[in-house]
Image (cartoon, rainbow, N blue to C red):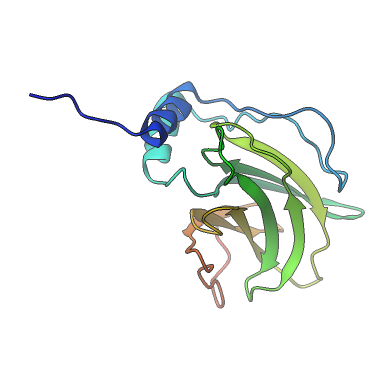
Amino acid sequence: MSPTRRTRRDVLGLLAAAVGGAAGCAGGGSDGGSESPSDTGTTTETATAAAADRDLREANVVDVTVESTAEGYRFDVTLHHDDAGEDGYANWWQVETLDGDRLGRRDLAHPHGTRPFTRSATVSVPEGTACVVVRGHDRTHGYGGRAMVVDVGTGVTEAVPQGPERESTVGRACPNG
């Protein structure tokens, strides 16, 4: 019986899920957002199960927290993408209305490794907007992965699949918790 052959992405995805935690980089972002490492708070067992349902070749939004501030809403967005040695790293995430109008974008200047990482930005959300969608993007695959619908009032989130051309969220209800 021959051993199962695993690709580099398979091994890195399993390793990232098993190790948990997060990698980050030092310094602040150009938009005043933070560049701190994240800990998604998941156990190894939970992280392994969660990683199995996503393609780490694509920029997956795995967590979003939102807080109202005097300047707008601060979004702390955690992405999980296999950025190890890749030219096709996760290069930005954005916040948009359910109708697809972009409200703000956080650019990412370089690869962040194979673990989930969190970056922040403050975004102006129009009055009366109850829900937004946060989408990740990578240089090679475009959107792909999964996005997150967020109730800006409560912070409740719901993961949604996202195709390379963005899955429509028009008419989608806010998640309730």
